[in-house]
Length: 605
Ligand code: M6R
Image (cartoon, rainbow, N blue to C red; front, side):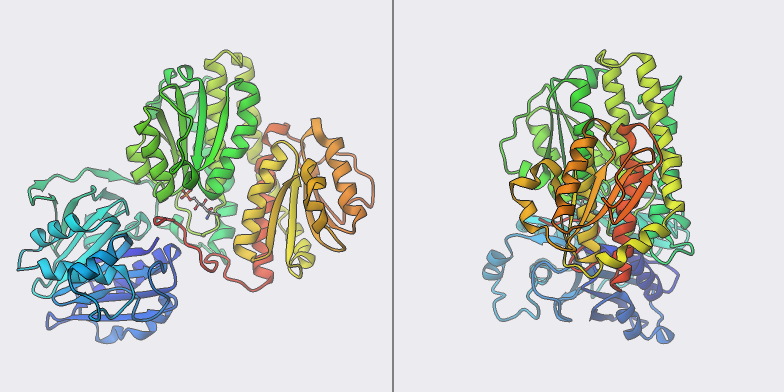
């Protein structure tokens, strides 16, 4: 979850590290620190609790003159948020930063006699001491020994006192990408930190050692044999990682959704039908399976819930969605005839990755829907369908959700076609319906002031309830997650028919209920449920299609979306739910893009 950056080259290292950490801050923002070789080739270390801005203030950039250093922004796992626990950590001749969790740190503390010698409460400092005890002037040999005794996940960037200008990296599970650029050599936990310098990069393979110097990057296997890195190219640009005039990344990313949707859908339409040949996905993948199992976390999992509600009735095969952290420790009912669809924006979520590995061990075919090119999940899955949302920086996922849905909808359409559940004409009209979602989203974005006004009531309430039936229920789940994660209002989603089985006990005067009623076949039932909560004093925010006929007085606020096919209403509805959360967070003066306790990529368990 933490952000990592390392630089060696002709430019001023401190500035590059601080800028890189600002780019990576969404990965963790409890504390930040840098270490660098100063002009006398001694390692200097500066770290602070709080955000990168606090670290920047602590750095005396006027006196800077370094050309090699490492930087870290932390999401606390082992040990509280203190200066001592901030990275980098020093032990003897070793200075390192770490992303991940060393699971056997306790055993290592005992084995290496570290009790009483540690300055912090972190597992990372233990690793620094262990590495120092192995170091006898040969960095690669010491790193190899370290990897042989640590258990868990890690991305390490390391400097040794007696190797000025050099940075070493090694990883297991936790991501590290590196690039040699005209500005020097860079390594980071995330592509976004490399984009200002290059679009060409490589993923540091697991259990390999990378060495950065000012004039080159070298990759070695764990035994020290040189290996050629596999260079990849990303089509993101600097603009896509900047706010570009928007006050927050989240608002910018909400606005980017129509474009992201087109970028994900249009290249995959051929002769009016969905076509994945450019993705290397053959129809046999869709024909030769008896069931679909989707696995993901958070928003990505909720995208799966929408797709399940859409696909199962059409495909007439079991479609299951499981939370990755549950799936990985279960004995899931999957086999060689199961298509396991793994959904992840980052492609690095640790539970989702473990679920992918488990699914493969059961012989299932795996198809990953991923946004970040070259990420671990993308590389390890049998097949990958990239979404083209560009970098998503705000912790609250918005555009990634929409493009995940678009990708899943297209998969569902292709499967229906291949399995004889859709004729060409039906598939074609489905795609046209999907494309109608683009202007519908644009329309809702253009009307964003409506949501701005409606949160006045919401922000003074401790709780909020979302409800819907069928697809609308699946949309509610994401609406509740969005609201709670950035406004800290307790929010819960309820299948409207379930209300009377418990949740309605919580509905009292002025309790906000966001009722989604866009599905024609259950519209009347849904409206009855709205009446039930209204009768108990709820403050009802009702979302329907333009043509819905609703009694006056039923809703305190009524928002209408364009009249599109019921199957695609999730797209304009998602915009409304995202904007409600956004304005609620803003109205409470909270940190919209970096909500407390969260980080963008959950790379530890
Ligand atoms: O990168 P992933 O899609 O695997 O991330 C999964 C979740 O951590 C993520 O969707 C999270 O729930 C969102 N930040 C919520 O907005």
